Every structure is written in C-alpha cells, then in structure tokens.
Length: 419
Ligand SMILES: *Cc1c(COP(=O)(O)O)cnc(C)c1O
Image (cartoon, rainbow, N blue to C red; front, top):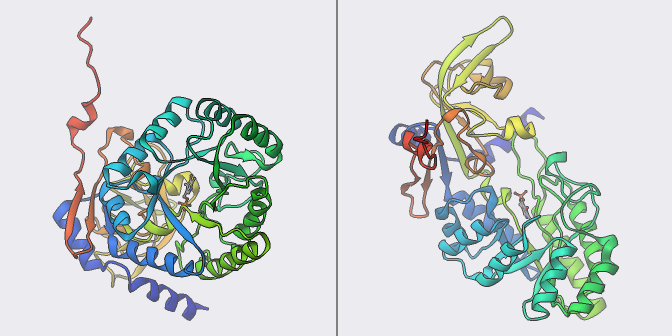
C-alpha cells in the first residue's frame, strides 16, 4: 500500500515544477505568489480530448476557477471554448480572443438585462429558470437559440456546498417542470438548441455522469431541435496520494457508447459538451508562501505563514486538503505542524501535517492551487492580494498580475471632506 502510494505520487511529481524552479520564482517575484505551469494545463486538456475522441465532444473551460487573461489565452490556443458565469467573465473571454460562438454563458439568478447583454455579445446562453425563459421567448421568439439548464435531481459532489443537482439546489429548472418548459417553448416559439446539467464539483463516480446522461436523453425527447447535451463538469482531481479521481478515460468510453446507442435508436447525432474548471487548472497551480514564525504552544507547533484564507480560502471554506511541502528544506527531518495564516481570524490551512523541518524564512508550497485559489482571494484584513506568474508554453517565466500595493486598497474609496 505504502509503495503504491509512493509510485503514484512520483508519477504525479514528474509533471510538477521542481523545488528549485519554485524557489527561483519566489526569490524573483516575492511571496505570497501564485505560480502556474501552462504545460500542465496543456497535458490535462490533451488528456480530455483524447478520452473523448470517439464522440463529438466540445470543451468549455469553466473560467470561474481561474480567470487570468493569460490563462484564458492559453486555453483558447489549445482549442478550448469558455464557460462563463457572469457577464464580466464573458467580457474577459472576448478580451482573451475567444470568438462569441466559443463562449457559453451559464448564469444563475442574474437579471434579464444581463441575459440581454450576453445576447448582444452573441454568445451561447444557458437559461436556468422559467421566468427568464418566458421573458426571453416573449421578446425574441425563435430568433436566438438558447440552451436550458435542467436540474436532474442527482445528489453528487465532494461537499454539500459544491453540490448543485439536489432537490434543494437553486440551480437549473427541475426536470419535473418539463411540462411547464414545454408550454413556454410552444407559446413563444423559442429555439432550444441544447440541454444542460451540472450536478456539482468533485464527482468521483463515473456512474453519476452516466445516470445524469440517461436523464438528459429522456429529456431530449421533449426538444426535437437540440444539437447538444451539456454534461457540465465536476471532474475530480487528486489532492493527496490515494485520492480517488474521476476516471476520464472510462467516462470517455462510456459516454461515446451511450451517444452511439442513442444515435442507433433515434437517428440523431448529438454533440456532448463539458465545462471542466478544476480538472484543467488545479494541478497546474502552486501557491508559494514564506514561514514567518514557528510558534510552539501548549498543544501544537504552529507555522505561521505570510498569507491566510484571504489568499487561499478552500481549506477554511470547504475543508479542502492541500498538500504542503517545505521546499527550502526538503531533506530536513519530518515534524508535525499546524499551518496557519497571519490574519486575525482562525485561518488554519492544515492541522497535524508531517512537513520537513520548517525554519523561519523557509518557503512552503501549497499544491493544487490553480483552481479557486487566487480567484477567491480578497483584501480581508487590508492585506494585498498576491502576484501571479506563469511558466508559458515557450518555457519562460512571465509576471501576469502584479502584486497589489497600498494604493489599491484606497483606489475606490471616496474620502469624505465633510465634517
Ligand atoms: C463551477 C462550474 C463548472 C466547473 O466545475 P469544476 O468542478 O471546477 O470542474 C462547470 N460548469 C458550471 C455551470 C459551473 O458553475
């Protein structure tokens, strides 16, 4: 077992940036620092396209996981489309050079004006409630095709906060409301081009997708004009040795078989769309911090680092596990530490971790920091957000977001001169 875990880790390690590379960039650009390796994004993208080679698949990178425009450009060059959840993400996508027809806009609870803005920009629109569907259909009839986000009522996902397909979820239109959807479609003449589901993040079990697909095939009978079924995302990647991940290759094979059978049965050759976020960028990201202090208390030994949940919120928000290593002392004896941040709120990154002896000033790295890392950062405690650097396809280091400065904290504040 132990041996298996080690082999597994070392196969992961071979794609990773080395400690030396990370220390070099940390010295050059300072810490805390988000570091992205675009070659790993390329590998993940190629793994996906290879897994789904036997079906007409299209991939739309769910950019809410990491929106730096340079990362978007990299994915565009690989041939990916873009999945956006706000109009600003759509505009970032256009800025990164994506053609509108390669952008999918999947908002939730936005107002009608924002939907209309997306129509103006010419992107695919996923509608996730009947009120908007009715307004859109009434105004535009069949002149602008749309996709409908359905809720298949499948409980899935790594954590309740990131599950979106269950009965209490605010996402999608319930499959039990299909009669109502049909009424709206019929009365307004709206052109439904695709149907969509996304049941949450970190779904380990391939069968969840296949079950969802069966539900979608059943729903497809109500929409004679659809061209695609969008299965969303939720592909899980390993965060620690022994973690189960979504088996993309098996999923690819099974999905291809299911679409083939569907075609045999109905004569319809549909496309399948996916919206992977975490799968494409998680492992490509490294978050490098510095150990500020080692603090021994009566109960534990804390390593206090120059960051906090204001920079990486996943451990506190989702109880997420991020592997942490001391890249400055990789040969040091392993000791047990609790790794915490420097903000005035409990911000524990990890309890009781075995880490090579940490000395004040050492650099630590958090792995799997590409997805929902920088993207969920804030200025809590009036601390500055980190810089981002990228190892580009040509093998060069590029600063892609400068570290914030004190002026950024005041930028939008209006200081009153009244007494
Ligand atoms: C967040 C989200 C995704 C991406 O999920 P991952 O788990 O990061 O792959 C895809 N589609 C939609 C609609 C989302 O909201």
